[in-house]
Image (cartoon, rainbow, N blue to C red):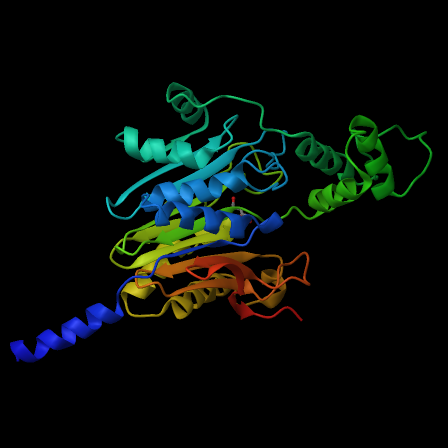
Length: 365
Ligand code: SD4
């Protein structure tokens, strides 16, 4: 029996030989494609998988045009940008996170330092900033004019029951449609921002975009690492943390099984501990797609499967198993805003970077 088991084990080992692969959320401006390509470049050069995914997401964190991550991210309701990030290093089984971090462009790197250089796993707020500065990170203003213009539009669009806003001209001002009036007011303050961008920022103000980037990598030695980084929900209360910095919620990875991460409405993910649940589902034998759909079913169950209430929720998971099997999985086939777009993920393999459609639980009618 022992002899018979040997060749079989050999075949399994051959089939399970890990492929080099990186997956991430899609993100705007092809951010996901650039992120995955960069992470793959680091892995191909023999770099560590965590250094690889962090180098990948740094591109998006530093892109001022991506308003959901890092520099240029949309602020909280007080006009303060607060960033969240978490990292998992598979081979060492170590993790780190930062929450509500202000004035540092690359929170993913600070999360890595928390993991590497401290005996803690998570730092938040003023303590996280103090630590980052002690580690040599540069404190700088990360609230860009575009993000500020979007925030001011949001402030100005808010009205009391009589239609009044303290952030607009007085009652004797000439009447104008609210959208046009708000855009004109903000344009006076930011004349350098073009019409098209201002219209885009108005959409951000009214329908805050979902963004965030999650990235997971596997190298040919079977080593895996993952990161999630975000500016969180736009216009959130000061101090609010979503799922992204919560290890087990917006990010989880077990070197022996695989990893998962999320983007979208963090509160709903935290109510099911999605990333951990998905990895455990894989541990119990479910393939990545089924593992993620099971987690999404639990989110839907929390709303008694009421499609009307679920309609406002966008939630996406990204899953990579240790043998290279992967998927993106979304609550809905399309986002709640921009419904022409399909839910997608970015993937990079030896064949290069590409977008692929995610599987989903529900279809928007
Ligand atoms: C959060 N999950 O803070 C993040 C936000 C996000 O797409 O991913 N938006 O809840």
